[in-house]
Amino acid sequence: MFNPVMSPSSARPIPPEWTPLGETVNTRYYLIGKDVVVVYPHVGSRDDGASAWENVEFQMNFARDAGHRCAFLVMITSLTSQDADARRIYATHMDPKLAFGAALIAEKPLARAIASFFTGLSRPKIPTRVFEAPSSALAWIDTLRPPENR
Image 1 (cartoon, rainbow, N blue to C red):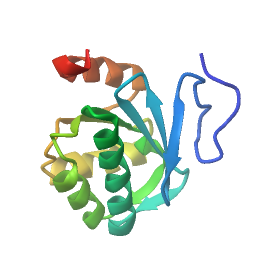
Image 2 (image 1 turned 45 degrees about the vertical axis):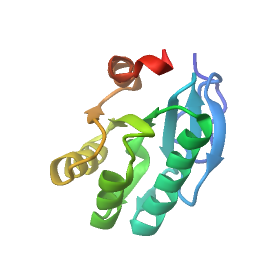
Image 3 (image 1 turned 135 degrees about the vertical axis):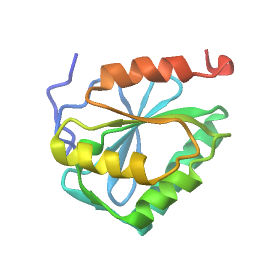
Image 4 (image 1 turned 180 degrees about the vertical axis):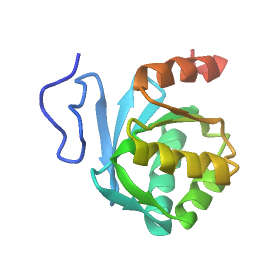
């Protein structure tokens, strides 16, 4: 069930069960359950090397502080662009000791193109797949969840 209140940085209502975690220069973060971090870029934002570093640092610090590996549900539909530096940073600096997967939610053609560039041109260190809906992404994340998180 979605909360009718829209997040100022999102294109869709934020479900009430998503716990706000914080914000970076271009992204808001929410927690679903114990170990799924929703990465929600601000609507219309661009992702470059500087924002990617800030986002990776936020994500890895959260997982480290939580004391267990996390998965990341990235609502990439909100982005308008992502440059090569950002793709390289995400692919090489998401630590498999802290992250067990990344699901990219691409609900529109531009988002699918951005996600395809990332998955096609990068070699992420963590399992990464593109989905059209959060429900299928969360089902996939469940298959990756490490035993210690169950």
